[in-house]
Length: 82
Image 1 (cartoon, rainbow, N blue to C red):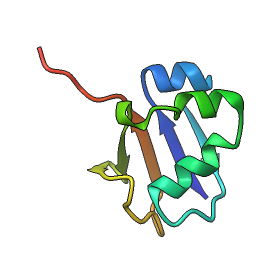
Image 2 (image 1 turned 180 degrees about the vertical axis):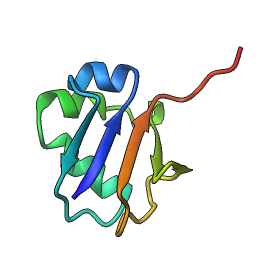
Image 3 (image 1 turned 30 degrees about the vertical axis):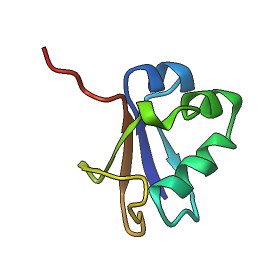
Image 4 (image 1 turned 180 degrees about the horizontal axis):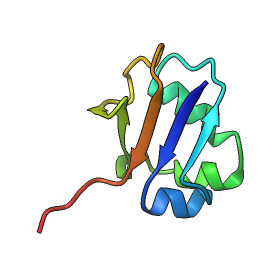
C-alpha cells in the first residue's frame, strides 16, 4: 500500500486530498497510468503531465523514478515564485 497525496487543483479535480492505493506500479509513470484508470476525474487530473510535479517520500523526483518500497507519492502543480 502506498499513500498518494494530491495538492492544489489536482486535489480539486480528484475530489480528495489523499488516498491509499494498492499498486503493482514499478515507477511513478506506471502509478499515474493506474490512477488514470480509477475514474474520469483522475484521468482529467493527469491529462497534462507537463503541469504536474511529483515527490516520492518527500523528495522531488522524475516520472521514471522507481517507487518500490516508497511510502508516499505526492502530486502537485509547479511552484511559482513571486
